[in-house]
Amino acid sequence: MSEQTKFDNKIVQWVDDRLPIFSMLKHSAVDYPTPKNLNYWWNFGSLAGLMLTVMVLTGIFLAMNYAANAGIAFTSVERIMRDVNYGWLLRYLHANGASFFFITVYIHIFRGLYYGSYKAPRELLWWLGLLIYLSMMATAFMGYVLPWGQMSFWGATVITNLFSAIPVVGDYIVTWLWGGFSVDNPTLNRFFALHYLLPFVIFALVGLHVMALHTVKSNNPLGIDVKGPQDTIPFHPYYTVKDLFGVGVFLIVYLGVVFYAPNFFGEPDNYIPANPMVTPPHIVPEWYFLPFYAILRSIPNKLAGVICMFSAIIILFFLPWIDSSKVRSAKFRPYFKQVFWLFLADCFLLGYVGAHPPEGNLVLMGQIGTAVYFGFFPLIWIIGKIEKPRPLPQSIAQPVLKQSEKI
Amino acid sequence: MADSSQPASDPSDGASRRDFLVYAASGLGAIGTAAAVWPFIHSMNPAADTLALASTEIDISKVEVGQAITVTWRGKPVFVRHRTPEEIKAAQDVNVSELRDPQTDAQRVQKPEWLIMVGVCTHLGCIPLGQKSGDPKGEFGGWFCPCHGSQYDTSGRIRKGPAPLNLLVPQYTFLTDTSVRIG
Image (cartoon, rainbow over all chains, first blue to last red; front, side, top):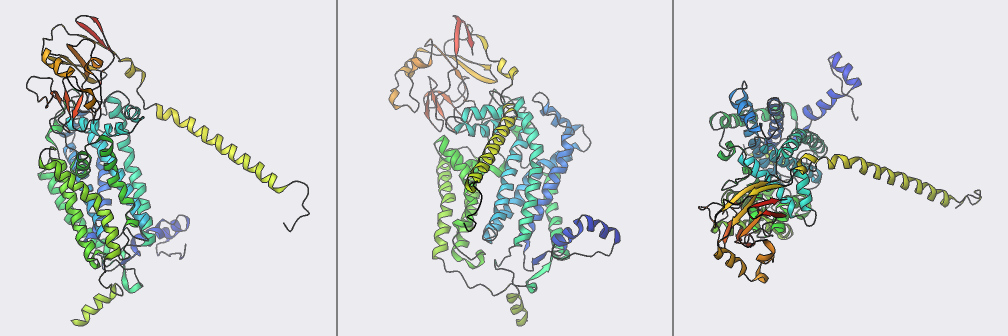
């Protein structure tokens, strides 16, 4: 402890002398020196934290009424919707919450990409973020299985079968994952157990993510280092109030969907109870998996498709070293900026392809989209070598002071 | 080195004895941990009651030529198709060397008119269409998987699309001419 904080309140001081929770809180949520130039894209980290809390809270109360048994899981969810007091609200908050959790996290990730937040010294911060993202995907996938509708069942079948592509041991792994010879009651039971467990793993990872963040401090839109106290403002009240304003706007959109279009993100087929004898004519995963699903389908070989799909995420771990440019923010990187928007557009294209049956032009579009996705990484390595970045400002405060001089 | 007057016991000897103890103790610890982890992992494998449901008997006397039925075995659909002479001929006339998973039709059936196999696509586990008369059967007159477009011929062999293998033929025995036990 570099400095021992003193509190006016005697009880607070008494506790803090024995367990320094108040100094820790003051250190990381009140005094925490934050770059003064953060824009609204920096709101999405705390919004993701809010969504994690909403998901855990609604999830615990849903679990009190849900039955993880293949015979009654579907009806227990319908009972939550019809008979449990406010059950419909809890379930719609939870189901749409997953979508909005992913929306906030995707914006958070692409903000990090645009402003180079993955670069030194924030590599581990980036890694922890990716681990959170991977855990979220596992949690969301298993959660989607729980209502035991047709999409639940067949989504689970397709995704667990991905592991059968592993040579030699693939079939044993799949049987082990299922606890039987097909997706069935044992599968549902373990998915429920893990779906309840993983959010706490995510909480732990978020703790480490925030610890790493507070060690290396926040990046900022200029991507240059903080030079001194003139470049920062304390987190409270400046960013607490800005984050709260963001929460207000975000809740209008989120609750708007919950109340007025609660099935917007859902698949009608999931209101049909699971039937192991009939595959729905068109299986689609939830929207947040679509780009990866499109990559999987555009490779005409099973093992290669599965490898490509997993590589699409694994490669992000290497990004801090693939990007050879020392300049962080895309503001000062004319070529990188264009490639960034191309990459973002490509993710939307892959999402569109993943949502539709693989027929006609869509097959070719998916293959081009996959090539562009993986082409992005060597491309930014080359760009880092040949690009001439625009001149960086000397400090965060300098451009602001210059503008105020003009006035 | 400066202290060459150390007593007879060689310091390197003592170090290697300590190394041995450390390695042996950590090795034993690792084996013990693995042994303790195994029950947890194995508890996720199919339980005894799941394994007990391993065989199914079916009556095929009502299945006319050209018809197919789907029965359940180990929670999975099993396709039983009473093939027409044309379908049998089409299946036998294929040049086996051109197939992705080379198998002759004779290797896949016990009686040519009865094709019995697990109706689970070898790609990602969907159930191919082609059992009902109105279903799409693909370019080869067999089965068509709606998930990712795999196409199987009248012997259930993979001909087109992402699936790597032919539809699996389970173990089965004809108990009589009209009754089959699968498993």
